[in-house]
Image 1 (tube, rainbow, N blue to C red):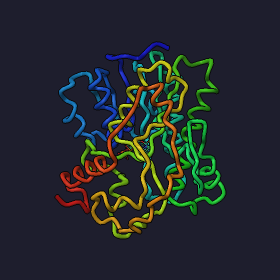
Image 2 (cartoon, rainbow, N blue to C red):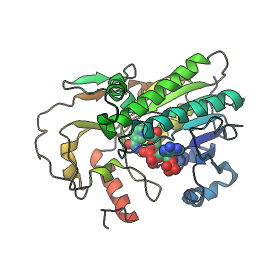
Image 3 (cartoon, rainbow, N blue to C red):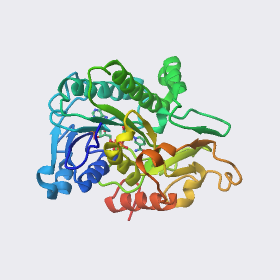
Image 4 (cartoon, helix red, strand yellow):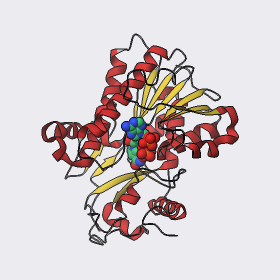
Length: 333
Ligand code: NDP
């Protein structure tokens, strides 16, 4: 594999999404040409406005149903890399099929198109998640790229919809990523491209689009939200998107899963960070308590040279300010 450098052409799926919009911006700023796929051109008109000044280095194409065989056959033609970000991210459904089918079939569909029509393709970068890595734990545990969230998959298998919307999302990301690695292993002798997987935790920071379909910051901004006592991990949107660009260029990233993160946090600490309408929870209850989900980021540092120093309060403030400016429901300027 040689480094995929600008002005190489990259296909970004789900181009109108919160993270993907940043991924587009980072690729374009770095000098790459970008073809974005969206389900609806009218819904994605803001992207043309935002990136028009890049001229023919930016284009949008419609892929209406990512689960259909051959859906990406045309879109993959002539690209050097693919960043596959499109996948449902919300906690609105308790029907496993609503998330698992588009997550898994969307992934295998684009890989099949890449297999058949990716004669210029050198690398696929898949946006997975820390959801596919870490499992529930009650004792402090370190997680790295060798870990898989098999218990999320098992839980959906045994409990079905009773596992709840979060559990379904966790399983959808685990199953989609596993499907990608299996695909690459099965077709090893037929493909001249490799796979890199980016595993971010919750992404915080300002959006570049009007109304993200899901934001954790918006989710917790509700008096009825039940603030968990648990801990989460987060990454700044600028860092998570930059990781996709670095993973495109870094030869040694080929064949690797890469966790990216800015840091851990306690959900109980969120009310202090200026998000409106967050229930108070139990202030101070995390004092002296250790983080139990400890994500290792050695690969991000060594393979991508990625480090990050944004404090959580700044990233949350950016998200809140952004929602206020855009008039997001529940956020007033
Ligand atoms: P968004 O909801 O903002 O974007 C999701 C994108 O995927 C949209 O373009 C959406 O299209 C598309 N999409 C969703 N469902 C379907 C479907 N059934 N068929 C076709 N396209 C679909 O989410 P994010 O930007 O937050 O997430 C992007 C990726 O990053 C996802 O893979 C997500 O799992 C991953 N991720 C996100 C994290 C976060 O905290 N935001 C954390 C870790 C990983 P449309 O607008 O038309 O629905």
